[in-house]
Length: 533
Image (cartoon, rainbow, N blue to C red; front, side):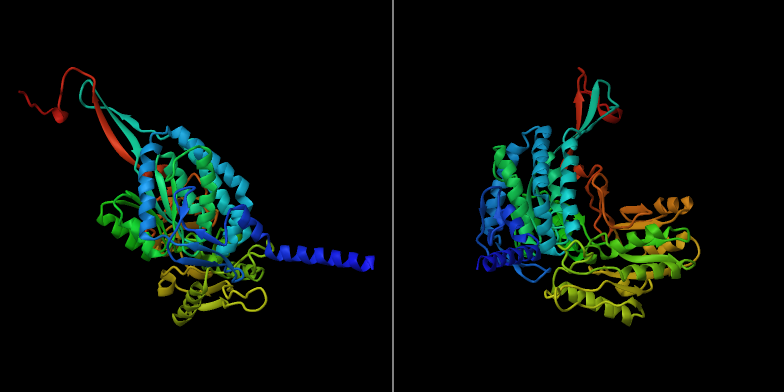
């Protein structure tokens, strides 16, 4: 009898262990992040409230309900703005290095919560767990960058043409910064903006994507603890939740001098025009249609992993995802075969299982867009090399898992000119000199990321010159996808022109002021003008 009972206990423990493994620790992660079954989607820090309708967040990984978020009403929003506006008046008084200390503590909190937050990112939007961890690492990195920057918000001294005068340039906090982020990077984009805005002396109001609302709740819980520990007022970090109507509250609000918006080109046109009408500033990070040029001297050991990860990472849902390979005719067959061969090794499945390379698309709408794009490419004359399609069966119950596709195409195809947020890679042939490839690379409306694979110095330098890539990001011998903290991130043309993260991107979160000081006993006028009384 004792033996039977003991065996039962062992089997029960094994069953429990298997169940936990199948869950991949999601419940524990949610608890660690303070995410509940029903969450208030409006917050000014530690004060959480909401009176709007409920958003249900279903995971594209398994189709299960993760949690619910109450949305923001107009009254909730006005309460947030009243609190944020008041907080700005005191937060700007804090010396910038002290604000940097707050950001430093936030970065350390993120280190403590990295695994849990990375897991939530992976589960709520579908990217691989490694990419989820990488996204949280981006948050940590921007905090580190911002801490140092908090002691370097430098202006300059400018020589004056007038004797006994000096000119200076200085930078002041701008006020309340509105942040609108997209589902594909549900936490990092917020951190890019908010870490810099905080050290600049601004306060932030963040509308996360309604497709990943729990990520914004989790992030707010993390920063709320830091602000509370430092006895800082409510309103420095605020979140609001809901659909585009909630976003409109920010874009039309004259109390918000800067709106930073990440998303589609269509969304950017609306946000940019609306904010401009009230003479506000907008920082726009919009679509990409990114290409890698592959020249005759390209090293396949670099080409294949760079192209494949760029095309299928985050299931093709990065603004920097590789959409086009522009390949020289002399190496076209070799490159094509290598890429097609690599695709056969891609494992698709639960992104929390680190044996898999590719997870699901965000939702069924994205799946339908993906399928329509493939049919459109076929109709325009595209030759399918790797068939796409929706995966079904065990492990794919959500209906959001698709097969990465490869299609031979021409750059002028309408569907190639359009950004499809899905794992579809177009192979395009070029002949002659690298200039011909550059012309095709530049021959789209978007201008975010680009790359060239070459061992020829002249080709690389041509690509990086004023006559080369017209994108905000231009790489040599690495792919289009992935951006390091430290460089300014953003693009040209229909990508919106904004810059975030590194370099001098901090300046957009501040207002510039030119000062002239007369330390003489005279009042000479500029340009030698005489005005004697």
